[in-house]
Length: 309
Image (cartoon, rainbow, N blue to C red; front, side, top):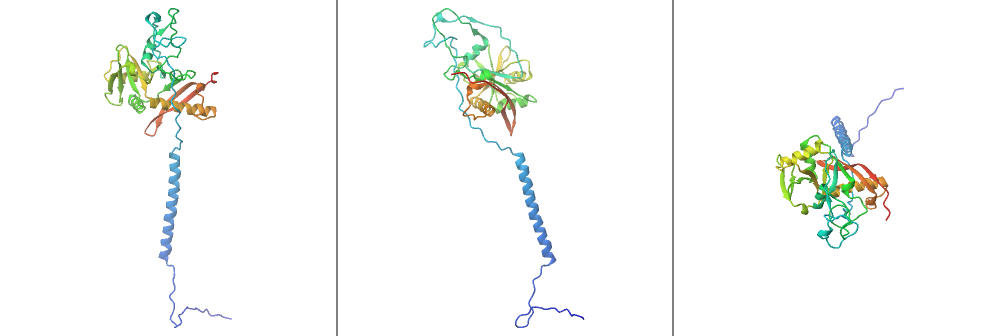
């Protein structure tokens, strides 16, 4: 039995054949190319997002805690109470001038931040049994009222700089707007700033006008202390038999306190706003690169139980 294949073709009512639409080979190739391009773009976009998220560091900007104000007696005589009036000449204490030997290390130590503090470096007062004045019971530091049961920065902060050379170190100081200064041997303080310049800028000021905290190297023979002396000398300031220190502006002091409070709060499992600053004992800071500049970070922090009220 044989069969014959028959083909049918659609026709109009008038008998005319109907044109058929067919996908050509060109259409197939074009569709494949367009689909490949779209898939390649999506794959590239996903890879770019993965790369971007690996490069960016998402951090929440810490909320600054109000900068603490610390009580200090300034140039008032050390004592046990609070005299309402300045002591007379008959009540002045005898001053003993100790031998001062700078022990220098590559760690900076906060000392104090007023003209009175300059004197505190050079001499110390012995309590005298003569006279009727009670002196000033506030701790050493800038003259003012403030907290007395919190260790001040010049007793608890250390900052460690790490650098590959003088130029990098100068950029670090300029980034934090830290000024170098030389004092002693003259009634004024000589400052050096814009330290990245071949010849840094310089100016002079009165010690009593200075309100910032300053830091001094604990070891003068170290490379960082020598960098300070070299930068001050390049600014045209005499450094022979003078003390070189770093002055920190309020904004940088705030930056250090914020980093300290963040680290302490994390260690205690609380927030910086709820942290009791009386528990702060010692904080060691480091300097590291951050974006196009630098930032302070906490290397280590030591806490203590809050003193009894």
